[in-house]
View (tube, rainbow, N blue to C red):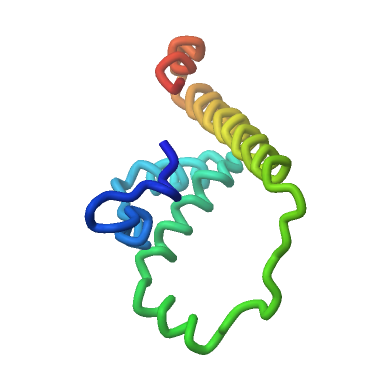
Length: 126
């Protein structure tokens, strides 16, 4: 459960995970549909763009040699409180993502005269 500390006979797992993400295309389709219907599905759109950026490994490596980043390390005074804030932020992002998805479905349903079962859809998304 704790990927940061998971270790096997080859060493830490985290160090062996590639830092590039693949795509299935569903996020891209959703972002395109959101643009077509004029619905701000920002979280999914940003996730798609982040995956695109992730795939540019050579460019990121070259840029990291020129742009060294901040010279000061961030200080976390209270790690448990900080992690709790991260947990709540992730939870809020999930709620916003669901709300944006339902907004998109509502607009598509209006435009296409669909009678969607939003309760059933919500249960599938859980």
